[in-house]
Structures are given as structure tokens and as C-alpha cells.
Image (tube, rainbow, N blue to C red; front, side, top):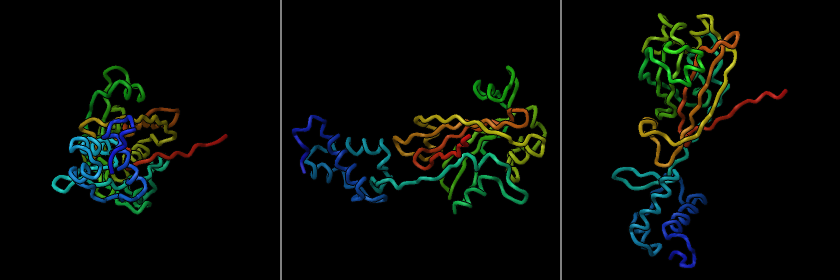
Length: 254
């Protein structure tokens, strides 16, 4: 197959289009190994540099991924359902933390790694959401959330330090039934949650921690949890890989 000389687009884009069609049609299935650069260049009668550039386009789109020492493969879809309303309520007595419980409902193993806990000066936007005055500290719990051993979410949870000092929220240990259950025990049950969702490209650290392929975006979800009298008691900043999460919301209709 030779690229179409009548097509005004660059040859590497034409090659990328042809390979993309094969992926989308299923001719190249998830997990299949792509031909080598030499084989692609011979097949389309283009230079090796053109073939390599075409493959780079599909890597950027998240359709292909390189595996060191093995080659380039069609990415396997890693979609996972993330439903906002599941994670705001307090786990019932005897239940594990909400992440573990909800993962189990989907037939998955939910685990988490705590990477930092301590008092900090919250970013301005987070401090505003928590109603903190200038210089008033927050306590943050930073975690990496896993499903079946794969990192799917980075979560930084902020609390007003004045509400949680001296509690297990300030410990590096995992909290039985989760921090939200403990906040309820302290007299701050969740009554309402507000969320803002952004889509953007990941930072280098986010890409590394979530093991994202080139060109894969992330969701940045900022959730504010309000207790009685609309008192803000928690802000979660969640970074979710765009190739393994989708957001679903139950929207009440009045």
C-alpha cells in the first residue's frame, strides 16, 4: 500500500489514519503487537522516519503504547466506572472504607497507599472552599488509589486543622471505615457535596504515578463536603486517569 499522492496531508498523517482505522475496526485488537517501523515503512512505501512519526501520533492519542524491549502494542481499554454519589455517604457499621467496599461491588480489589499526612497551608482555592482565614492551616491526607493493583486515582483530602487535630485523621495509618466515618463520629456528618470537574493533560509526576501513556488526559475533580448548616469540613482533590475512569452522576429532577 502506498500513501495517496493526491492527498494534500503529510504522509505520516495518512499512515496514522490507516493504522487508526485498523485499530478502530478491530483488525488490530487490544494487546496486539504493531508491526515494526521497518515493516510499516515497507508496507506504506514511506521512510522509516515517516513511519515512526505516524506511530508517535497514535501513541499521543493513547491508542498505542510502547513496552521496553518488546515493541509497540495496541492499548487495552481500562475503563472503570466512577460514580460520585457512591463515595460521599458514610459506610455502615462493620463495613470497610468506601473505596474498598465499592470496588468489591464491581468485582475489583480496592487498595490505597498513604503517601503523606500533615498540617499544611492549603492552596488558595482549597482554603477558600474550606472557609479558612489567611494563614489558617489544613490537614491533608495524600493517597494513591489502586484497583486490582493498578493506580487509577491520586487523592489529596484537606480538612480544617481546627476540626481534626488530635484525631486519627492526622495519623499516617489507614482509618477504619474511612475519614468520613470518623468525621461523622466527631459531629460532622456529610450532608451535601459539591463537585467541579476539569479535564487537562497530566503533570510529569501525575503521569508517572498513574502510569499513563503519552497523550492520555486526566480529570481533576474537586469535591467539597458540607456538614450541618453548610459547614465545609472536607475538600477532596482527585486526579483520575482519563483512560480508565468515567464520571457518572445522579441528577435529581424537581
